[in-house]
Image (cartoon, rainbow, N blue to C red; front, side):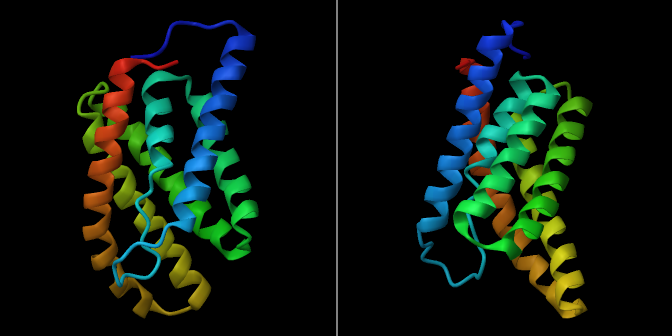
Length: 168
């Protein structure tokens, strides 16, 4: 499902547009309170852009946009600690989704969203255990995994719809 080869200028513009979209989604989502008593729960809507790019763009472009979103999102959100959590979760989700898509030849993109959300949660728990130096934080993983399946399904379905439409 890779997009046809674009000129360098068009590819750079498309990547910049997708990076801006991911960053805007990330910043807006951070401002929306979720009416659930689960600390740290987010829908992960910016992951739609990452998954879309994994399906339609060169791997390096998708990785660059992910890193831009993580770095700039942490700066704009003003939380230095969130950088470590976002980086660990984002990289693990990225690698997991790419591996899943490669193994399944790009089928069932919606399930890659679930795989990515679960991997993201695992990455964040590993960082939390390291930062807080307590294994008790890992008990929170069960709650995060349940939420990750639900939110990952949502982001995966949206990314699948977008990838099939080939917007860029």
